[in-house]
Image (cartoon, rainbow, N blue to C red; front, top):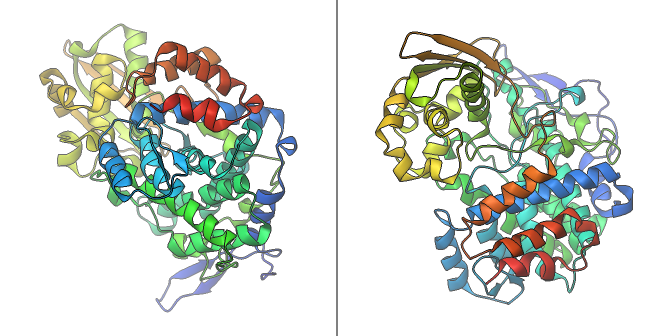
Length: 500
């Protein structure tokens, strides 16, 4: 399947005077077919050892936040719904017990991965020419855990291969959408909508795990194109339960379309390029996509290995500002009670995502709005020097000292501040004032977690699980995860120990 050759996405004049639309095209095989071949043909032995090592740490990260998120808001209701619907006993439901249809387990399990807002985020890879993608493995890992019950046995190598493939496909399509550049081309703040590329990664992961053919994988990806939609900022600003429940829809649908494809149901194949393609649907033609990123050095360079891990249980757009507050406290020796006010210079994206609407972000009345509030998160960090699960709960939101500091936080767009960077100025009650620009924090590729920190992170999250997980079980689980390629049965060694 060949498309018009062009070094740049083709431009056409629209019917609106002065408006030029960008149509994503390039010469060569339909990229979805290339991604399908990659999904089906890649074996564990084809993946570089350093990529496998990173994949194992990412599994530990997302499994940890899934454990910690297993009892949060909306999860018990989703579990009740799965139990009420019942159905064929296929997959174990971690933390709650029982066997249910794999897709139903995915519906309940995937929101657990996002409930803490502490999982992975891909910030882009400037050397490869793309910026923020958004959340990644929070979609692929729970989908694979739920789908593992569909096979008599899933080994660690099979699981890691499917996980790496699915997460890579997700990142590739997100990179090609070039979404955070929208503001520059539209003369508006970047829309920062998390596009519907998440489901493509989840589908690729399941297709690899279940051994779909190239044709079946294409059909499953095509079906996913017909149901996907942007996970836009309306779920976050103000925040609603859809921030996390959306993950369940994606994971469930991914399993469903793969199983339908295995039964011969087909979907469109030519779905990425052209004015009817997915990339145009995301960009609306208002800014150029980067379709070349879909397949550039595929299987040789793994884009997902630049994924970031979150140190705080809050939106990534708050992390550099929170880190800046900690850096200033450490450097100058002051503490939260000494702070009179904080001002943060941010990008248009951060202002829209974590400072709008003002009432929801300066007076958060829910877990979700607290997690997506820049003034609230940095105020808690100023006093507590951390932002974990207790940080976004009602008792912390009610603390008078934190409420007073939140009221004295200001934020506005500062030209030149990076998309998730922060320029923070703290004024103390004695009149002293300190400023710092922060463009990095713990968990990024330049500041990775050590294996000890990985272990401490998961052990800390186990205390919030919906079922008891003692230290012995948690440490055995970690030992298995650090050597996951040697695991003989994912269900027995990973899922069952988390199931009452």
